[in-house]
Amino acid sequence: MTDITAQMVRQLREMTGAPMMDCKSALIETGGDMDKAKEVLRKRGKQVADKAAGRDVKEGLIYSYTHHNGKIAVLVEVVCETDFVAMNTDFKAFCHGVALTACAYAPDWLNRESVSAEAVANERRIVTEMAQENMKGKPENVVEKAVEGRMDKWFAEKCLMEKPYVPDDSKSVEQARTELVGKIGENIMVRRFVRLELGA
Image (cartoon, rainbow, N blue to C red; front, side, top):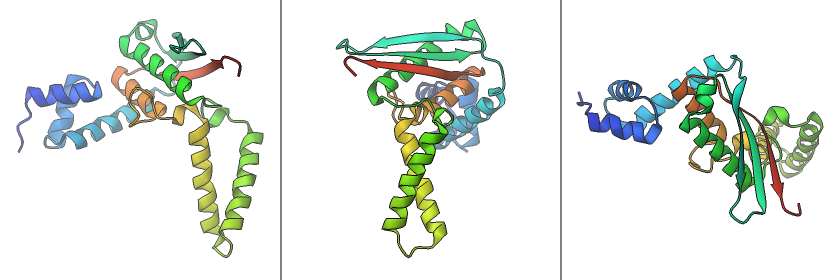
């Protein structure tokens, strides 16, 4: 059995931001494998986020970011359960990351739920027609699977929560949110955003 050293725990904490005891238990569970331990912590964060999802969020921040050239600005509303968390440095860093992501990618919507039914229906019609044209003779279920894949790609292009999180593009904004909820233990939500670009 691998000895779990304080240095390993510290290293995992620096990589994930998770509490020390959680890092230690994840390393013990995975026999000291850093990558597997990170995955364990990510799953635990998701479980905490799922439990917290129904709780009221009445505190938070309206965070503003102006790009260095002064030609793009973003406002994001990120909410949480307590004003204590709203003042937390990790929470503020997440708000900043969300604003940077909105600035960089100029998404049209916050998430899939905020896309109008009309826009979804229109895109699905176009994608279905293209798939039927390009996949003539293929079974219907194969065509449907291709349509769903293209719709997922379209949502990923258009929705802020599905964009790569600019401070760490190995994860999406939603994954960064889930990890933060797992770390802090409070429900945290990005409620809305506005992106302004000079002359747009």
